[in-house]
Length: 433
Image (cartoon, helix red, strand yellow):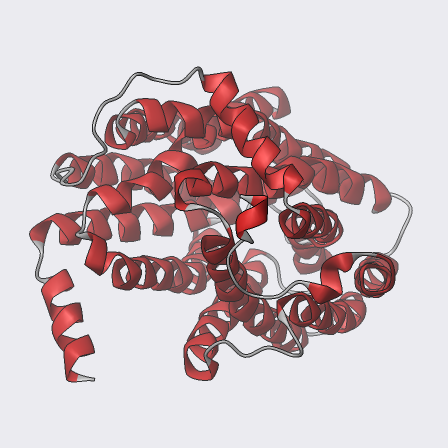
């Protein structure tokens, strides 16, 4: 215990890490403001869940399409320089969104174009951000540093939505008292949320400029970008466990992603108490995720039979919790369900990342993680668009109930007909390397 305290004190006492940590807090908090404000802006300005789903899809498409290319470019060039450029670009894009809302010139075409550009920038900022830490701290400090940064991210997922929801509700959420959507009805709170996120990117760019890369990889003859991407895809596909898991997770993300991105704002707008309720329930979900991560540290490598079976069992539980979400009549009921979903998700997030880090050869880990993120980001726009379309014909109870049953069915079919239930912890067998 004393050694852990000393290691933590040494890490937090390192100015280089403190600059990076400070920037991460500022940037992550700003991200949460836009995650609440953007879907809410489209929803109240159009009153159409389908259009909200399409805008979210527009932001997700370029991120999914270009993230593998972004990862390869980050490996070739400095992650710091790529991250710095993306922060300046996002400062401008969020500033334009804020100005458009605050001046009352909200047009869906412009909102969609800016969402598309934000998604494109994130295709480079995400791999750059995940590549920074190994270049900033000593190798022995990396596990602890990763834990600190992951905890920071989860804390912002708790505090950010709560603050964003209160801010938007206090200064104006763009809806009229009668509940009808009206883009010109006091949307200052949404504009201020975008302005704060824009400022967060600019401030975090300044903190990033103070960070020195201490352990950057030596420059070598660069491998062609597309060839490097292809080698990573081939490695994942040729490993049965990785291939099965990635395909299964993509299916699950397709089912759950749209419900979380599109159906929850609709639930808050039509059943609960507006933007403040959306911020509250998303904040509670973040708190559950943080608790799940902490629980993972307490339980250690807890498994039901093996890694694959544990994944399937948790998905069955999440499916059971999704089913009643469309039947809630009060904010506390939605918050209780999302708290439980967050705990399960946080626990499995640690387990999945640890499994991937153990399974994949170190030389291929960056590309494997990019592929992992690519799968989730690739299905996100499809899921968002499909959910928005389905809500034209289905009730929230039918949508959430169907998503829960589908997730449970997918887990059962994976248990019966795929190797998912047999996947164990541990490195890739040497014969598969």
